[in-house]
Amino acid sequence: MTANKVCITLLMLAATQLAFAGGDKMKTPPNALWQEECGSCHIAFPPRLLTEDNWKKLMSGLDKHFGDNAELNAKDRQAIEEYLTRYAGRGARNSAVSLRITETPWFAREHRSISPKEWVHPEVKSRANCTACHQSIARGRWSEHDIGIPGRTGRYDDDD
Ligand code: HEC
Ligand code: HEC
Image (tube, rainbow, N blue to C red; front, side, top):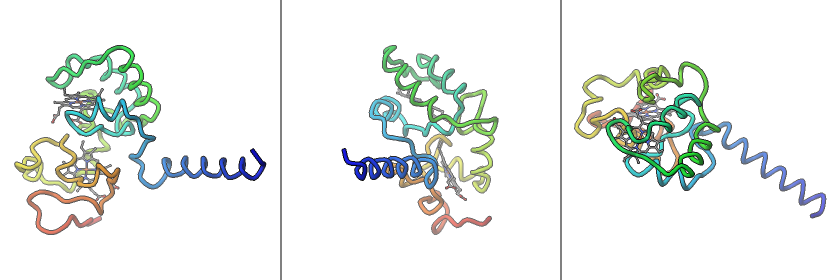
């Protein structure tokens, strides 16, 4: 490789890192195993939304997973745990004893504009049903411009 090519490669690497660090904070480098195994019953929840400790506990109890059995073979479990903990969130605001993202202080704060009635709307049902409101998750988009709340007229308007 010429010095020039090395330089361009390094620049591209740096840009990739930046894209993950800033912009859409929920994005992590793609991981097919995680996407497939943890995205079949619900969306593959972004690693950042729980702490390393939370993920470890969750991954060690997959046979009793919120009333379901989500058990994996040891190799896949370990690989997914490594991925989740590598990109995990930090601090009390991203942590919940129940291991539910929807019960972290972060979630409550971010979703404070949603009324009790809106949470139980037939199209929402569960707080964990992120796609009911975040309609562009499949394209990796979580921002407020990509939210529609079932039962609310018009698009979501940020009133902050
Ligand atoms: C067999 C189906 C199934 C599989 C596979 C599965 N889950 Fe779940 N998961 C569930 C169910 C059911 C819930 C409870 C959803 C609810 O309360 O609405 C849940 C909830 C969760 C929650 C809590 C959501 C919240 O904040 O309320 C997390 C975090 C989670 N799963 C992570 C994972 C991870 C990581 C994997 C892959 C290792 C995985 N799940 C695989 C069925 C599954
Ligand atoms: C009932 C609708 C609804 C559900 C269900 C819902 N959200 Fe949200 N979400 C919102 C609204 C409204 C906001 C506030 C947007 C703002 O003001 O920035 C928000 C904000 C967010 C943000 C911050 C976006 C930003 O750029 O500011 C993230 C990330 C997020 N939600 C993730 C989740 C996850 C993960 C789930 C499922 C576990 C979920 N949401 C379930 C409606 C919902």
